Length: 298
Ligand SMILES: [Zn+2]
Image (cartoon, rainbow, N blue to C red; front, side):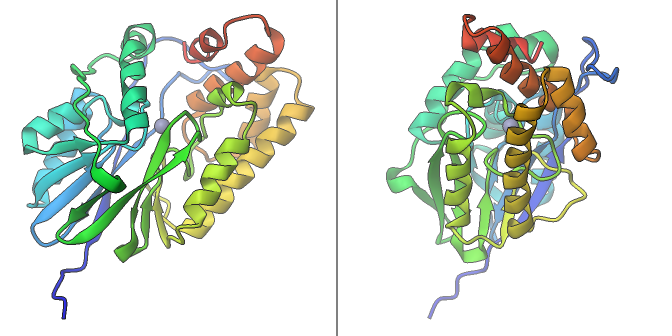
């Protein structure tokens, strides 16, 4: 007989910090994307995922976590993009928690640090020191009050070396940037891997876990967490992108056409960064791909 307490989870969405450095092609100010952090908890302990990236966000998220009155044991990072984890150490120190990631994600975290002065600190003030303190765990799993939390590596999605956290006992996948929910998807790094094939494979890998609930790394907080809907919409967004890459001749045309199809999606700055990279590589095949990707954000 098991008397294990059932786990539960709750989600905190950090709004993107403001930028003051120009506008998008449609004239609206540049911004960012909301980042979702998931708290999975039992009766006394809890695990947090992807704790966002500015000091202000960490303070607000930390207060929310503290209000749950659980002992935070681990902070799991799904992938290396800085907006998901630059604040991890602040929260790790506040709660005495361990930071956990895969070996591939840890390598990408170091790459994100190298990009701070070229990108992140240029456009966002208030990012704290972000040492990489994450460690791997044996067999890609750790536990929360006796329940397995399983790290599943899914390869390239919107960047390299991405992973998701599967909590089988509550049919939950914390999907990082593999699945999106009501926010424009970051398409730019597909130029490194020749298209959206690897991302589609990553979506298939999430679907194979048969989740009922998916928390997406970027989501409109007013939408639900239906796994079926978010998986279908993420696939459709990539299919639309492939179609528009054939029919639209410029990045601005692609940007406008996507907004027409997704008028309520958040994070148009992310859409523009991706469009800039996709068309930048097409128009300037001799340029360094990494430079083209970076330029899309600036
Ligand atoms: Zn992201």
